[in-house]
View 1: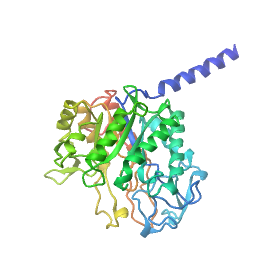
View 2: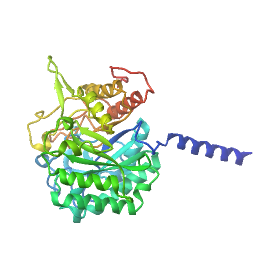
View 3: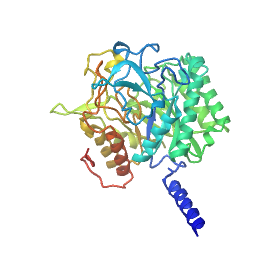
View 4: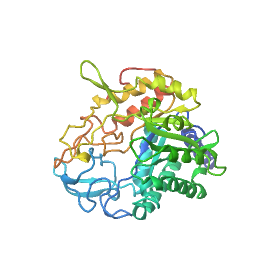
Amino acid sequence: MRWALVVSMVLSVVAMADDQRIDSTTIHGKTLCGYQGWFRCPGDTLNIGWVHWSRDTKRIVPETLTFEMWPDMTEYPEEEQYRAEGFTYADGGPATLYSAENKQTVLRHFQWMAKYGIHGVWLQHFLVGMPEGPEGSVMYDSHRRVLEHVREAARATGRVWALAFDMAAMPPDRIYESITNEWKRLVDAGVSNDDRYLHEKGLPVLMVWGFYPKQNITPDIANRIIDFFKNDPKYKVFLAGGCEWEWRMETTPGWSAFLRRFDLICPWNVGNYSVDKAGNKSASTHYWQADIEEARRVGMLYLPVFYPGFSWDNLKRLAPGKSVIERQGGRFFWKQFCAAAELGLDMGYVAMFDEVDEGTAIHKVTSTPPVQAHFVGYDGLPSDWYLRLAGEGTKMLLRQRPFSNELPVRP
């Protein structure tokens, strides 16, 4: 009897785990966060220094900082913390940072997603770090290790994930070769067949970011990319295009046509805001209805971008507070979920999970950062506040909680 009871308990745990696994067969009903996974520290596996924490990888001091928000490190054990020499908290305690090279840290992030009801991530994969890119020889193996950490963490937590290529800063003549070669490498390695990899209509979902006229892409390159991913018999995908928010009004020759060829369109909305008569800022969402109608007309799905606020004073070497878009205690973020819910959307792209460089992170950030430099926090709110709001917003999109214009939780 005792053995039967043990078996019964084990089966119950397995069943519970299966119930918590996110359906990977469709993008519908999903809130996924952009996941940079680009932070590195001295002493990690890569061991080249402070990547994305400092503009000088060999040292981290106030004048070299490239990030705006200091992560809350209280839950990270010693083996996941990397000492930032010279930085201390108000009580004099030493300040530390994390590296995405540490797979336990990536797992910790996915455990937070599971706890708060976030479905998974779009893993950013920058072409400049591919073998064909200018940073490839240094960073490629590290990027692939982080990708494997994400795969393992998704399996362990039942989350889903999809790849998001980013063409930023890639020389135009290398874009097509780089992006197609890397996808072939990943498919041939079985990555797209992973049980936790997101699919739609039986195809792996793939995002490509950077369809902006002012960047390095042209209609010819764009159409070659789209042709490959939509038509290749072995490497075909459900293709998501990440573009500028004004995509529907684009008049640059050749652009209007290819911007309507994706399976899903995701206009980048970070930094796009409106100001009311009282001077209050809110994310611009007034154009979403027209976007949705146009996307439907040409047979595309529409994925809105939600962002909690913004600031990149350290990254751009601006005076403190110069670039900030206030979070308003979470109301700025919440209103975007409300707009999407009112329009009947059931999915969203949260920008971003770990983007402390531009002050859009929703993961755990401290409001009592080191005192040696300027940082933006969560205004004294709990460090998990935006994880909670993202989870509650997801429930509202899925009609699992009543619609509310007001924040549904309290600190």
